[in-house]
Image (tube, rainbow, N blue to C red; front, side, top):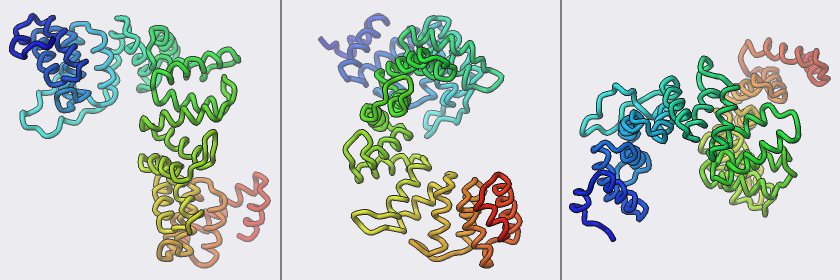
Length: 395
């Protein structure tokens, strides 16, 4: 039975916390937050942690990592391991301002920018790990493998990942799976990695779902199953993971383990491309350039090839160069074509090297391009490339 707000405020701090938890589970986030905050001000570490979670989850209050980290520090100082582990996470993601930062102004529109702090993050993760927090153990292992070089200790990290996995942490299972794959020399080790990855994926981690799909598609530690792989790609894609969106979109395009669907496949590739996936952008550009049931749309293709090329995709850069040269979807511009051929060629695309050479032969490009092209062809010819040897002879 719900308690009136004024009566609930008169309860002892522990009772206020219990009532706040009940209200939170019932979806009454604003009423729950007021009681969490009241119990937190009274000094209850769990309530302080819950207030921080409200600020991170937008539960009854606006999202505020700065306020969350302030309350997490209070709970962490009291030894609350969940707060210590979460504070470490905020610190290494650059979401927690330094401990000595002043409180934000009353009408501030944005929290002061923070930067990743692996050193303090390591201290809090270590306390949480030693206090028995499985998530803290996983976070400590992550810092020891992916933090600054001076903090890394791969052997210790692998041991912490194993402890975190045994404690039920999905992140620990993912980390252990990756550690096992890194060092696996036997089928048994690879199979254990696959089992840990499966457990992490079933716990809902999108990265684990994506990697589980890769393992199923490639038959790493498990029987190859393209259909199940595509199902895992879909689950991770629906959670917003860029790489999974690209794989799921490609599976739909090619009918790989799923019914072929060009429209939906293009939609998922577009989502991945808009998040910065260069390969996905190049594939979308190729779809528009090739056409299909409808005529090609070269202007749209050029837009996506440009996005991919600017992200470093060498084949897209060459395709964009060809479009500039022929005027497909844009005005002809030999100078811009040479720029994109040059970028693709310098990234190692041998066809783009020949394209640039042909353009230079017709009087395009820069004066220094001739010498650079000669060097490319000479190196490839010396490695046994007969086409490059012919082109070197032409040079």
